[in-house]
Each structure stands twice: as structure tokens, then as C-alpha cells.
Amino acid sequence: MFDTYGQANVTGLAAVKSGLDSWFFLTADYAFGQDLEKDTSAVVTKTGGKVLGAVRHPLNTSDFSSFLLQAQASKAKVIGLANAGGDTVNAIKQAAEFGITKGGQKVSPLLAFVTDIDSIELETAQGLLLAEAFYWDLNDDTRAFSKRFTERMKRPPTSAQAGVYSSVTHYLKAVKAAGTTDSAAVIKVMKETPINDFFAKNGKIREDGRMIHDMYLFEVKKPSESKGRWDDYKLLATVPGNEAFQSLEQSRCPLVKK
Image (cartoon, rainbow, N blue to C red; front, side):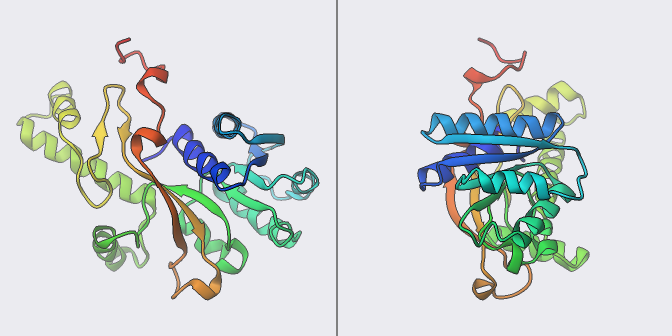
């Protein structure tokens, strides 16, 4: 569904192109957060933007005040949240409390799901920029799958849940086509078969195992723009898979023949 390179590339690239060209990072101090910061910083600077600074916080931080005040003082146009889960939710809520977003700075969670936005609520989350691989209200196919999911789960699927459903379905179809569960035979079919379902159009699994598919940059709606609960995103840009994800030439995977 995603990796740190894809998340960083979609958010950073589209933001800088739209004029949001100075960044400050709040980074969870472990490998995932550090990779998100590194990958997004590389995209921002490569596209002509500037990174004005960064501060790292422990995992599961409850008080972001000192970190947010440093970000605010940097005057960066974008505060990139290189974290996830509760840390992202708490940072966004506290940024709103400090009046950071009303002051004109954009907050961009580098990994967030529609369930996170729902828990924060639009009054606080409005204007956030985020990259996703899937959104329930994107097109007729996503809406049809999400209707089935919601009937069982009483809420729409996140991009992670949609991605898992798509990948398991692709695997099971490959098992049927190969007539065996032998790993090598099934992987061969999976890589040879394009993925065309509610999640991806003309998706393809490359030799390094990365599934290439379109990614989307969304902005969280204002409460006045939303028609109801879960109507949270407006689409700003579609980034083709070959632009969103790291190229084979850059891959460090030992399976790639160079």
C-alpha cells in the first residue's frame, strides 16, 4: 500500500510545487520516523524547497508543546509530522490549540488514516495535507467496496484495510491460476498479472516486490464542505505510481538485477 518513500514523495513533491516550500519536522525518534523525515527532506530540497529544521520526540509523547513552539518559531510554511498513530493525533490537536494552523502554517501528517481524521474531527483537522493510497469516496469502485465493508464494520475502510483486501485477493487468484500454493509459482503469476480492482488500476508488482500504483494527495475538508461523517477529503493531486515510488534504479533490493 505505501512505504516511507512513497508517502514522502507524494506529500513533499505536491506541496512544494504548490508553493509550500519551507518545512520543519516533528519526528518520532525511531527508524520509521527518521526515515519519513529523511525521505521527505530529500524530496523537498530536490524540488527546490528548504528544510528549516527538525526536532525529535520520544514515541508516545503526550505533551508536544515545546516541539510545536520550535516549529512555530521556525516560520516554516509546513510542519511535517514524521510520526504516526496517537503521536500524530496528539500533535495535530495541540497544534490547533496553539493556534498554529490559524496562524497560516500548514500541518502535514506524513502518515495518517481516515480514522485518525475522524477522531480529530474536521474543526481541528481542516486544511491538513496528507498522502493516501485509497479513499472510500474516490470513485464508483471504491464506494462499492466501502459500502460492503461498512455494512459489516459500521464504518468505511482505511487505506490499510483496502490494501490488505486487495493483496490477499490477488494472492488467492494467483493460487487458483497456478494450481498450487508453491511460493515460487504463485509469486510468478502475481508479478505477471496486472492488478485491476477497487484499490488499483493497472497496478504491477515489480521484481523487487514493490506494488506500483497511483497515490493521492488530499486536503482535509472544512466542516462547511463536508456532507456528513467520513466525508473528510478533497482530492488535490493524483501521482502516478512510477512517480510516487522509488525507482528500480534506486532500489537496494538484492533481487534487482543491475
